[in-house]
Length: 335
Image 1 (cartoon, one colour):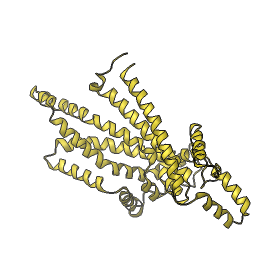
Image 2: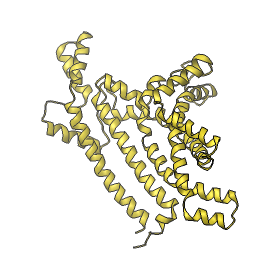
Image 3: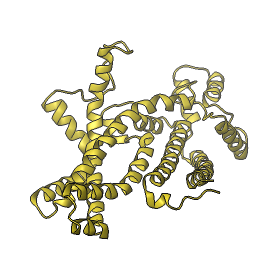
Image 4: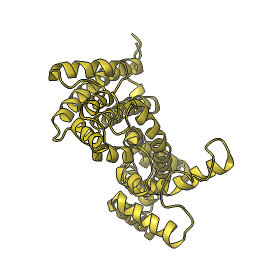
């Protein structure tokens, strides 16, 4: 068995156990949170004019399981449903499976966060190399300061600044929503253009919030590589500066690929404050609504989905690092 296959098998086994542990912890936390979502839904139905007995039966159906049994019985029912990919029914969206709600919200989170993360990664690593190589000059100082400033500013502050500049002052981009309701959904230019237009500010905010971390990490990695013996040997042999520069960049970027994979694993978590500010219907926005509605089934499903994404990202990061780093591949053996 190859090194990659052994690592994959080990990661999958550990990931499966971790998912079960997180699901168990989420279940017991949800069951011990103050407040009863069923009681809250029951009161709302009563206020709406429904008879008490009818409201009681309706709440039990909407909640997805009978809470009258023992905690152990509820837990075994929950875990059995998990193996069937059944995360229960959303209380805030009566009759709608939690998995359907999460799937619908994830599509609004993944693409903008993915675009913003990749954009910030590309810009950050390029400028990070220059910040390290030119660290004794004004350009290096300016790049380092820009990274430190943006890295220290909270995401919601960046979001508010972006809205103020591009929506309030310049008026060139919409401040909230995911698409203009005037367009018919489908593969038409107007609808797709509106999707892109509404996504630009969230993408820009994601990119700005992550840029500082990438440029500072890349600068630190490059400075470390600059002190390695093979760089000194290359310079002493009279190699062209462009070749030496490529050696530096290739070796310095390796640790950042692991960071990139892990950050992509958090995509499903979205950015709660950013999506709230832009009223963007992703997972972050969904979580806020679930907390306000005490929709614990939806909250637990969202946490579990984020956990699965993070675990998969860890697996991809490790395997990817094994493939791109020859020092790791050198330990590969065939059984």
